[in-house]
Image 1 (tube, rainbow, N blue to C red):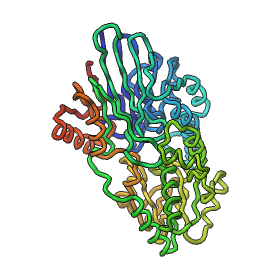
Image 2 (cartoon, helix red, strand yellow):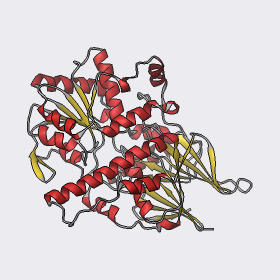
Image 3 (cartoon, rainbow, N blue to C red):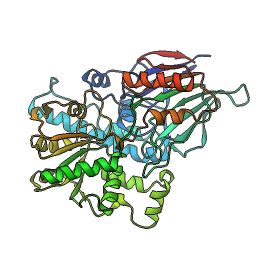
Image 4 (cartoon, rainbow, N blue to C red):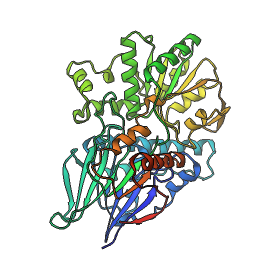
Length: 464
């Protein structure tokens, strides 16, 4: 019997999550993400993956962020015939996420051809909306906690990860039930945090023989009070008469930012500034959040029952069209602009940054992790100019980072989740993190839990 696992992405980096499971002549993929950030990583999106797509039997998805699902449309181009398994929340988000990604690909190619700043003539999108439509036909949603038979010797259970709507840890039982105990392979997915608004807490997993654990924040702690920092940043920027631009992920981050702004305004801790949500995708996602009570924590459920959910508040304005988005350039006085993408890799936030970065009165608030090679990371690292649409934009605005709004578990929260296993896994592999973060978490697992933990190597194959 041949059992192996290959790290085809999401090892040594926080993007491109792909883990190939071979079970004799069957091939399964855990996650199917795009590489983002550094050019050397992004170029890998244009290469065929290190496995034949037409032999994939199934894809199992942890959640709907692009770095975990953005490669799916490319499967449609290469004769994928299998099924894509995920939670109901992820299945609801995927059409919005993937069509938005396709639209950005198509717009970027069109703009590059119009202005001639691509080395490829003509520039082509990585995938199109038609590719998205074809791949969505393969979706099979499942409830949390159900043990689903994918074959007579393979079962999967999706357990809440608390990261975004629909996010799950993937718990695989490999082996026939009437034989010896099955091999338990668990992939954490991206883990969320405890006691956060909107979503329920991460769910513990009882058993694992082989464990893949993410390490996005494996080398740091969330020590700041996000509400106090928001109050400070808003007060300082308002005093200067400036605007606050927030590059926010349409899934998860935008909803939490709106939740906190609503609460702080109701408490009188911040002024009721004009708030603009300049992201059609975030608007659609917010409606989906409201429609999935299986993911809601008690506070969210209570507010919806009382008819005062802050995610559908009248206190912010939805910006729908490109013309409405451009009109925000003429705003006078303090305001808050929330737009995607969360690491400023594309989307409407770019033209806002081009307008706001040269003015020292303004603030760019980075509400979470910024991957290496992204514009968000460059701003975080203190660049003097930022290249946007072929132009070098001077950076004079204040740049603030707010890790307290991150939807990722920090080192202690990751260890809290790991302590939920009844016994140490036989093997623990640290994935989905930049090298320093992954090594820091591996060291902490060894020193604090007494487990053997190894940082996964990109392209490596494990015999199971």
